[in-house]
Amino acid sequence: MANRYFAGNSLAAFFRTSTAVVDGFTTAGYFDSAHVPSAINVVGNATSSRNNIQTYAFSATGTLFAHCEFRSNGTQASGAATWISFFNGATEAYRLSWGSTNGYQLSYWNGSAWVTGTSVVSAAINTKVQIDIKITLNSEMRVYVGGTELTAAAITGISGAQTTITHALGWSMGSSVTDNAYSQFMLSDYDMRDSKYMLAGLNGDSASNTNGTGAYTTINETVLDESTGVSLTTTAHKRGQTHAAITVPAGYVIGAAVWNARGRVNGTITDGKLGFRSGGTNYSSSGKTYNGGYEPRGHIIEDDPATATRFTQSGFNNAETYLEAV
Image 1 (cartoon, rainbow, N blue to C red):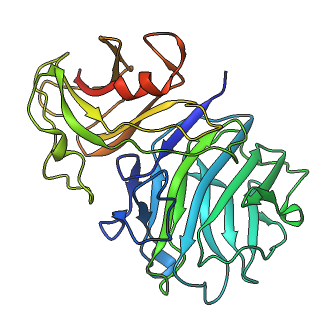
Image 2: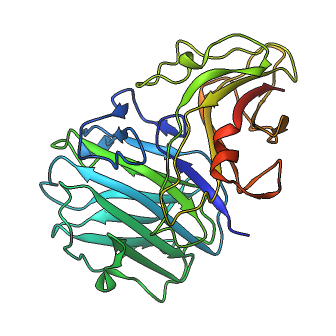
């Protein structure tokens, strides 16, 4: 069974350094509109305090694959700029940068210094590109652009590096870049070069899970607005949502369903769960360790819980999501 650690395309799935990071960046050419309606724009800042988006926590060992689509609205003026970095707790462990020679460059931390590979020029960064990174922890790193490996950029024979990854960050490039767009950000332990993240936006309120207050429109804004939301004040109460139907592209299957939601707790409610309703039955996650400040959490399931087999298109389209108080 594959491990799917993270998948997201909006700030429901990411921490952010500031409100200058804008959800719902809809400029054409910055994302694959056949699968997602927007990208996340990470606005440039001074290089010493650059902005970023950060995934919610997971725990990956062995091999980690990272997949995303990326486009920048400019070039890095001087020096290397990190695009995607991988941490084990507070320790930055591995990263992909746009090198000082304007190429893709891999690096890892060996416990005392950064070890950097060759900078390889490939697809231009001011067009949308698919980037995939393979990290065999404490062994090797490889990068693929448009599905093709940049073999000269690979680092092999790694030693002294981290053996666990707990979260990943996507960065702005620097002060000259105003649009640094990330979309279809996914992390797993298998090769995802042929994978796509398809967003099925919320489009209604459930007729079955109706506790609490807050319509689907209060958590489905084009630009995330945390002044409104769903509220549940009684343990085990659930509030559900329907979502738009998808058409699975020819040659693809639904590998997993993903439910991401920012949330916080207070009063007698000590945690929250994320759930799927399928076949007339509710299936809840474990507690997601929500706390007193809004933070992203995610729930990923590989199979339709009503059938214990892969989601069919109709099974996915008929399923609902819900939020549950603990």
